[in-house]
Image (cartoon, rainbow, N blue to C red):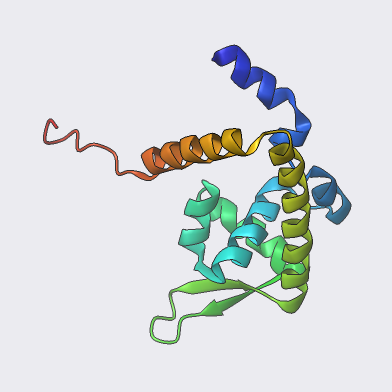
Length: 145
């Protein structure tokens, strides 16, 4: 299994299906992922975006700073709680998201095209199971369960 995972990881087309778009637009992977999450979710707080990216809020601030400077996103203060800062895509950011989304769909289409329909369904089932396990809350170790 380990050899299979290493072998898959070496395939650039699988590791980063949007690499050429990323290079063309001169974005770092965290910036691309931030654009993708905001494009999918519409609006996120800085904390939510940090959790989605798997980084600290300090790190996400740097990512957001650059994307905001370049006109891809805008930060907005909460109306009822001014401490809350939400990020959303600008029109320019939505156009960039659309390019990234098309690039990902093309790349995934190539990968999925390598599989017959039964294998695709089996892959989807396995990936959904893995995601549900990853999203499940951690067991409560304090209570001994």
